Length: 88
Image 1 (cartoon, one colour):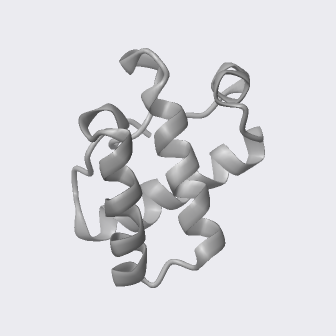
Image 2: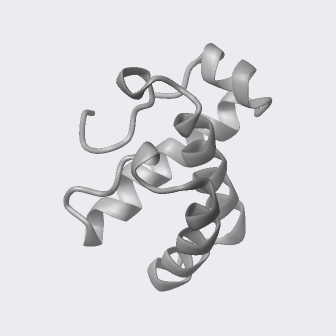
């Protein structure tokens, strides 16, 4: 789950990262019971994957940006602190 350290390291607002995490957990698991963890996809590929999946899932642009920022921030964290998947 996003925390202050993730926000600080990524330069993103904690609330924005938490929103992205929640949307990622709720929306992505509707079609992907075990969605990819943030570190399993390159930063460049997330920039390609997220817009397409957001469009398919009907996710609005604001939530799409939150998800992308969460995924990119989580990639910067050690994998045991990055969140994602179905741990919560």
